[in-house]
Amino acid sequence: MTKRSLRETWLSFGDASGAALHALMAEAVELRDAKWGKVTTYSRKVFVPLTNLCRSACGYCVFAKQPGEPGAGYLLPRQVMDIVLRGEELGCKEALFSLGERPELRHGEARQTLSNLGYASTIDYVVVMCGQVLNDSSLVPHVNAGTLRPDEMQKVRSVAGSIGLMLENSSRRLTKKGMPHHGCPDKAPLLRLRTLELAGEWSVPTTSGILIGIGETWAERIDSLLALAEIQARYGTLQEVIVQNFRAKAGTPMSDAPEPDLDDMLRTLAVARLILPVEVSLQAPPNLGDAFERYIDAGINDWGGISPLTADHINPERAWPAVDEVERRCHQKGMGLAERLTTYPSYLRDGERFLAPAPRSALFRLAGENGWPRKQVHCLTEEARP
Picture 1 (spheres, rainbow, N blue to C red):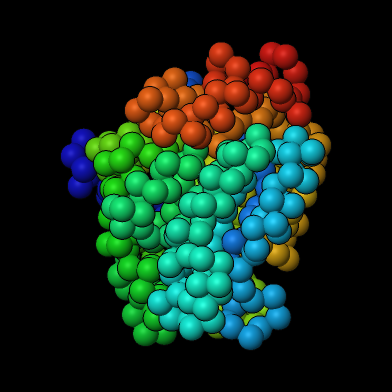
Picture 2: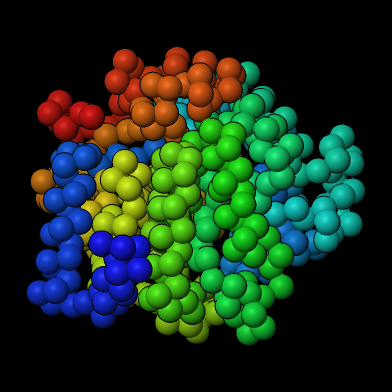
C-alpha cells in the first residue's frame, strides 16, 4: 500500500469501537508479542526536577512556575545528589532530569540564579549535574531538556544514556491563539522535529511521544505518529514512543477540558503499535489511568519510569502505582514484568555508536550480557525475564 492509502486506513479507525476496536487491538497485540514477547518493562528511576521555571506557558501544565511562586526556582547541586543517592539506596538505576525550557531567556531571576551557580544556561547546568550523577552514583541520567541546538545536543549526549522530547503533536494549529501551545516558542512542531532529527544525527537513544486530548483531531494524531515513524526510519534512534493521555488540572486554562476516555486511549495505542516500526517500544504511563492494565490489550510493552521515591512532577495529582501492583495486574493479563535500563539493549549492543564513553561505562556496569539490568528488583518469573 502507498503511504497515502495507509494514512487513509489509519484515519478510518478514529471512531473504532466494539468489535472493530477489539480486532484492531488484537492485531496490535499479535505484532507486539512477535517482537517483545510476554513481558512488559519499566525503568526504576528518580525524578529530578532541576528547574520548574520555563519560558513557555502550555495550557495544561502545572509543572512550570513563575518567579515568586512558592517552590519556583532551581534545585541546588546538594539537593540533586540527595535525591539521586536516596534513589540509589532503593535500587533505582535512572535519574530523569526534567526542566523548563530556556527560562533564562524570559526570566531575570533564572539568569541571576544561574549566574550565582556559575553557569551561562540551564543546559550547561544540567550537563554538569548529569556528570556529577555519573561520577558520584551508579545511576544513569535520562535528560528531558526540550529543544536543543547541535552544540547542546553534543554536550547532553556526553553525559546521558538517553534523552527525551515529547513531540506532543505535529500540528501547527495547536500553537494558534486559544490553543494549548499558543505563546510556547519551544512547542513549535518544526523545532521539536528538528531536535529529534539532531538526536538521530548524533546517534542518541531517544524517547518521544504524543499527548492526546489537548484539542487535536484524530488526523493530527495520525500525522504525529507518522512523523515519528519517519524519524525512526531515517535514523533508528527512537527507542520508545509514549502515548500519554491528557489529564485536566485545576488552575490551568484547560482545567475544564474533557479528558480522553479509555476507548480513545486503547484505539490510539493500537494504531500507534501498527504505525510505528516494531522495534520501537510502545509505552503508556500507568499513573494516568485507573484501568491501566487494559493498555496491555492494545499492544504496549513498557510502562516507562516508575519511582519508589519521587512524585511525577508533571502530573503531581496522579501518584505512581506501586511496582507490586503493576506486577500483579500484568500477571492477570498473562504478562511478566521486568526492569530495564534507561537505554534499551539493542542500543547497548552497539554502544560505541549510540553512547558517549561516560554513560556507556556506567550502563555496562549495570547491565548483564543481555542488556537488561543485572540486578532485577522486580521480575515476576524466571520465564518472564527478557
